[in-house]
Length: 185
Image 1: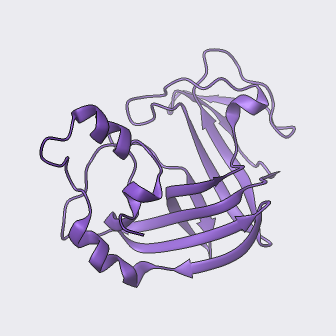
Image 2: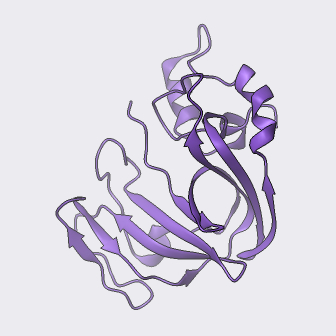
């Protein structure tokens, strides 16, 4: 299976990939009449969001979606087809989220130990990790957890456990769960 494209969050002037989600209220394409389909093997779920934390709010800024039909406008923005991405693009959005929960964000690759090149990038494979907590889309707290990763990397699942069914491994790596991205947290 192929590594999957992560949604991203611009925080503190830098882009981070979302490595884990615990909560509800992120953008849902189906709730807006968008029926995503796989864009390519690295984007099987058919959509990628780019958010920004601005004025202490989590806001959707861009959306890329695969769709058999032209999707509807979103927040007054009509989608444009991108031949390069083979997907519909929404840019210059300002869709406020009502997300309540935690986002684990990562950037930079830790190169001393391979990570599973399947599914979503786990936090333990990153050198710069932040955890953002939101209530109804408002930023409540932000923690730099980068220095806590050394102990996690020692036990992180870089490959399936002996005897683990392949389907279980795929389900785990294709999830955005804290249990996979930050084992023992």
